[in-house]
Image (cartoon, rainbow, N blue to C red; front, side, top):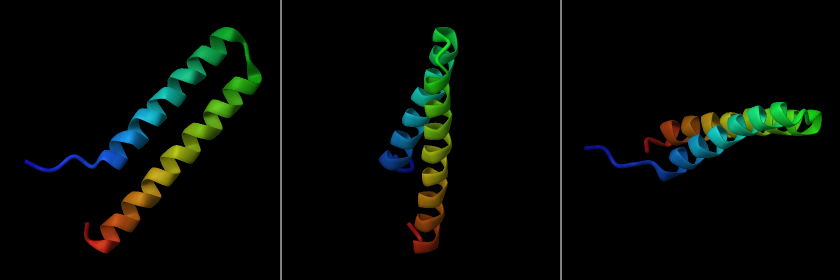
Length: 60
């Protein structure tokens, strides 16, 4: 059984929360909230992929 990579679980949870935030911001009709959640989602996912690439190159 493989070990859990807690960092990637955290990235996945944060991204999920941001995607839920987009839906909440839409229902509240908050343009600023929508834009912030979209930016945060893209940033967190990008940072997660960057971290995964760096770990793959290090052989972890």
